[in-house]
Length: 398
Image 1 (cartoon, rainbow, N blue to C red):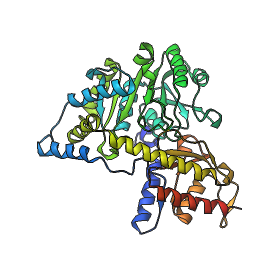
Image 2: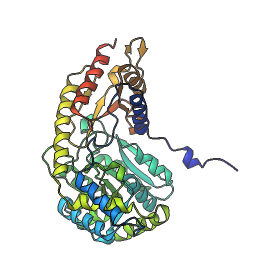
Image 3: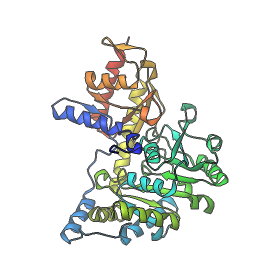
Image 4: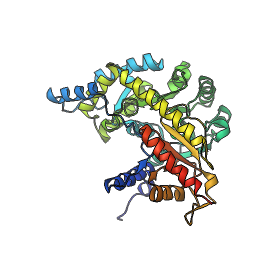
């Protein structure tokens, strides 16, 4: 019988991409839209990385590679894990994939059987539950409120584990909240993970963007027991302004990495050969551009927090990492603007985009229909202009 699969019909499209696409369409028509939707740095990929890609093309490095990535890049990832994350992995524990999403999809495919539960703290990156459902797993959401800085505690995690629990998703620094987990918080979570004997899928994509002065902490670094249960995920997109190059990577126990490599060999084969050479230069080359981008994001974070804190009807906790502000807008829902009742977070986003030319991301698909996400991966000028417009909207509420 013709028709789509039930899994395909159950997958939601990405609301973040939809918002960004609509904002781009308005800009293409000449409308001065300020977009806070982007989940990517507004900086160009550093020149040395681009030159490495050009060299790869010139030298004819344009053929298939090993499905799980070239050995030189795996070795560079091992060195990075050792020096930056204090984690020791061998090349046979590394899989290079077509971006962070691909790495995560591979992990869920390798670990999750139909009916297995995966604990996902809310708010969460909107793709996690869809990935879990695509492999037949069951996402189990644990709501984390402002009183814990939107972070799951060890007690909350322990209470959510059932005999069907297979894995727990950890994201630090976090999208959409901009929060990071402290060493103490991670140690407490690691103890539960080991006691309950479940996997930890640790998404550390924003690991270079921490603004507290603290050193990044990988949960797998504490001891052998948490290490063997953790799949550590990262990639080139956010730290090196390489979102379009599509290179992600994981470190895991050898048997997990082998399974993921086998899956990838049938689904996509190797990541782009040219992008792999670019990633090799990114990891082994100068890191000054990474430090520069982090410094700029930190300045923007401070400014966004300062401006949002001055606005009526909204509140936020100061972000400590990534490049997102997580803003509670629930006080606006019962109010009206220019004859339109706000109603909910989608109504707010619609009014802001169509009447004030500001694109924000409603966080219903992130598990929090009371909040919006504002990305400060945009210029300081845009941050000030966009928040001025949001301020105008809030002042007109009645």
